[in-house]
Amino acid sequence: MNANVLAWHITTDTATGQFATDVLDGLRQTPKRLHAKYFYDKEGDQLFQEIMASPEYYPTRCELEIFRDKTAELAQGMIMGDAFDLIELGAGDATKSQYLLQYLIDSHTDFTYIPIDISGHILAELQNRLEREIPDLSIHCLEGEYLAMLDKATTLSSHRKVVMFLGANIGNMEPREAVSFCSNLQERLQPGDQVLIGFDLKKHPRTIRNAYDDSAGITAKFNLNLLKRINRELNGNFITEQFEHYQTYDPVTGACKSYLVSLSEQQVTIHNNHFNFGRDEVIYMEVSQKYAIEEMTTLAGKTGFRPVHNTYDSRHWFADVCWEV
Ligand code: AVJ
Image 1 (cartoon, rainbow, N blue to C red):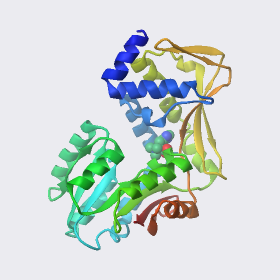
Image 2: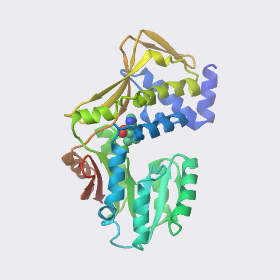
Image 3: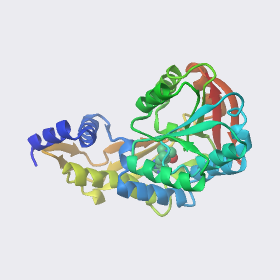
Image 4: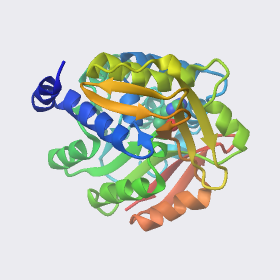
């Protein structure tokens, strides 16, 4: 394929076009970087499932414990007041939220569940399953980008809103990006609206590093899969054996970062675009930011929210925090 073919992709297929643009831009930067949001193609989804099942990766199990065992605590702030919309950004298969949904139904709460996801396929499956398993649930799926769909949800109803952003997905933002994301969220909400955000907390640095450097090498595969995806979808020629996963965690800043290290001096071509890699040069792949309790509170304060309540798992490794506008 030549550059014209790439241009064709960019103008005719927004999804592929954005992927191509972001990959080429990222690899032109110093240091080179790729975006974690592109990890999740079919193979990446499968590998992420394996990560969540690995003994080292604790965050999913911690948040599941909160939703399963502390449901009443999570719900207490929400159920005061009139009917509300429970909006979930990046709902996925909603395994965790389902405990909360069931609890709200059992306590005869008047609410509509509005899952937002970029994948229409995932939403269709979710809607099917929830209609079967929680027949009394009122559900309205929105397919698209988080903030655009949040705007849409605002035009659909004037109900009070509770917006959930779970799974420590906020960790994929650098602290500065988290501030602008929370501000954008706050601007779209009204006084009395709430958010429920899942944060992975600072803890023993080895526990954290091991979660992203599992002994079976699944996280390494997960990172390398993005190179394979670029080969598949953007006509790249990465030799994945020439790259090695390297994980860091800085217990002071809370930044947990993954890199791919080039094992030799090499050139990679993506659609006629050439990229030179020095030996030991890295690609910065992902940040999974960890928070101290005060750092979450500071983030709330900087972005116009008032912290209402934090719910923790039994080890205090994870927090789902409720903030109000
Ligand atoms: C889905 C962003 C929460 O950062 O912990 C897991 C992704 N990356 N292992 C995380 C991930 C490597 C995960 N999030």
